[in-house]
Length: 92
Image (cartoon, rainbow, N blue to C red; front, side, top):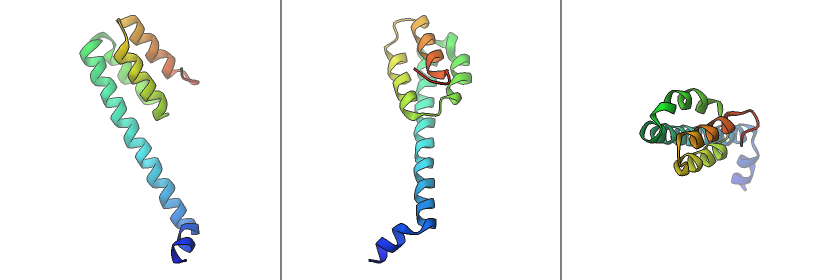
C-alpha cells in the first residue's frame, strides 16, 4: 500500500522520468560513439561530417537504424547518404 502511494507521488514520478531520460541519453552517446568508430575505421573521409551530424539525431532508435545502415554500407556514398538522411529533421 505504501508503494502504491509512493508511486503516485509527483516527486517519485519526476525522478523516474529523469532516470529514463538519462538512460536514453546514455544509450544515444554509446551508439554515437560506436558510429564514430565505424566511420573512423571504414569511412575516414566522413568522420568530420559524422561528428557534426550525429549530435543532431536525438532519437536512439534512429541512431540504431543508422548504425546498422552504415555498418552494412558497401561504399562511402551509401554511408554518407544514410548519415545525411538520418540527420534530416524527419530522419530516415
